[in-house]
Image 1 (tube, rainbow, N blue to C red):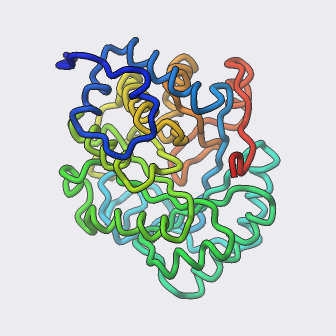
Image 2: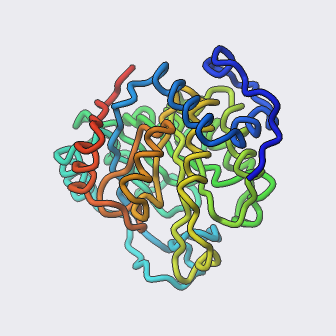
Length: 334
């Protein structure tokens, strides 16, 4: 990998909260020598965050499979033949029991995912609103990822107690139609706008390793960093190829690719929670440590991320003890 940068911007420039980043500026950061990149990201991280603090989140699939979308990475798409078993929306009681178990295991954010193209105003949405109310009453940050969302639906979720809404950009606008054709990039941005207007915390990131270029990765980061407000949370996912999906043969991304994404996100969005998400199960302890050094300050705990394998809770407790990390409390900074 070669760099075309002239000078790394000064520390003062790096630590301003900016929404006017150019692609060239972000590329200069992304392509900087890895030790310089790590040092700068770690410095920014310490200025804006407690570097020993990592939020532990749990993600539960409350409705699995049967999705009409054609996201090339997703085993829940109805058109692909994968080992994912379809199940209808879980009952409220079962979801609240799972949330209670997650809280007891140390999670402070509970995210509920449903394999829907978009939210529909029906009995299932009413049940999700009940779930949100119940988890909120436990004192956990409650998050949902339910697909596209109208302004009215976002407001209903806010009134029910929703803290955050996840809707990933996945990749750059230029590469998007190589991954998904059943919706467009504007649909993604519209949902993020509806969430932001409802004063719900925005969670939006993407996946690397889907055949995109590094320019596409920079493009996605540029879109996130130039939104009217930086997302409160940016998940960085490494593709976990699933048999039966169009991306089943993609090669594993290296830890250095993850480090560059995380470090660049940390520098251009200093206060954002950068989440080390899918793909962590295939990382060694040392590789995860590099990601934390680069500015990652959130993980998902539990044996699954929706339908994707994830390190178990006990392994993460050992990881925290080894690295001297501590769990972040819910609603910190509110």
